[in-house]
Image (cartoon, rainbow, N blue to C red; front, side, top):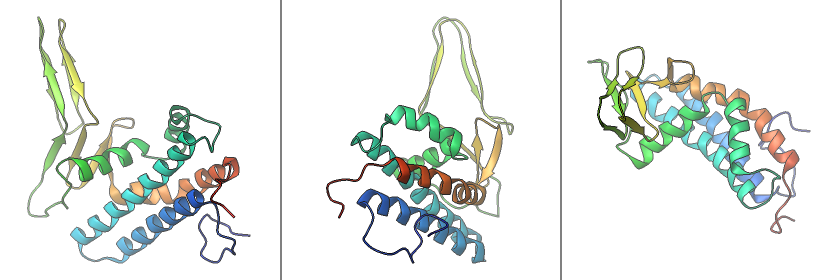
Length: 203
């Protein structure tokens, strides 16, 4: 009996295709994190950890797809509410992956300078008042008056290679995000496998 999901020594027959995919991405998260721990080059370490974030998000997306396909008795919305509590830094994993893949991309921090960047989009709409969006070192601050509003779409604030978590109001490194995922996702995957109805592709 395996003690963690995705153990390479697990016997055949091959598991449900979606289970196999979830296990594989979990193993990649562990693999990239192990490589990053041994990497002496800061920029390369950042890239390895970022690759781990991609596979961490893939685990979540494959579980969502199972719900969409009716393999789990839960909706995507119900699963998200559950996973947000079960997986540390759930929101940051999603935002980091989106901004790196779909928007401007994330680059390793440069030790020669200090950089803080607020990624958006963030729209300020002033109507009979003001819409103010400030980004001090302690995190974003928003003020609106009148009928003004601030519209955000998965904003991401980073400072010197760390990312701001809205829930805890702290900056978190990729290393902590990936390391915490490796520990927490074991229970998530076990629960997923227990509740999953096999597809017709399984043998």
